[in-house]
Image 1 (cartoon, rainbow, N blue to C red):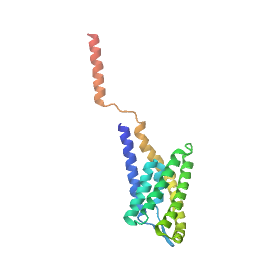
Image 2: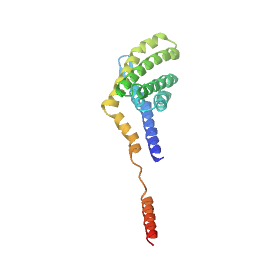
Image 3: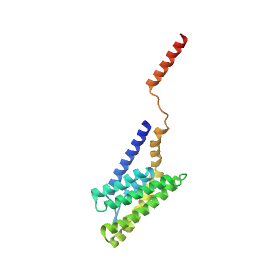
Image 4: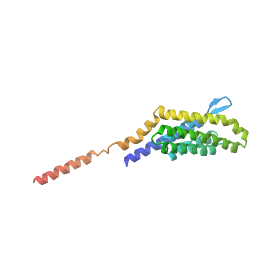
Length: 201
């Protein structure tokens, strides 16, 4: 029971931290000629590789939704759907495809996720702004943001060992042998001694 509580606490805390980072990264962008690049995709890709689909949706969907709601509310529902779907798909592919080759699986996952983000935001901007021209004008920035998020997310996960650290934290308590309380040991020893004395008598 204690092991399950520990694991749940680690996963809840990790999800909350990634949500906060997504909100923070959605609040500002890197200025580039003609627009901005947002780094929230880096956090979403990294979190989705590590977490299960529901946790990934909380990070990608709700995290970006709250980030937009606070700082730029117009596309917040587009962010909820697109980044939420992106995170879920990355998580599903990373955890269920090519289980013997997790790096390749996560690479496929973030690539598919980038396509979902680019297509979703392009269609979303056509709907929100009612102009096809504006969406096409922003398309190169969406492609760059999706590619940057996928590449940096993979680097952080595998090159910097974040996945290994996360798995060690989650699995640590599962693999530890159960510890018997000292009181129980003392009581058991006392019972054995009493039984031996009774037999001798």
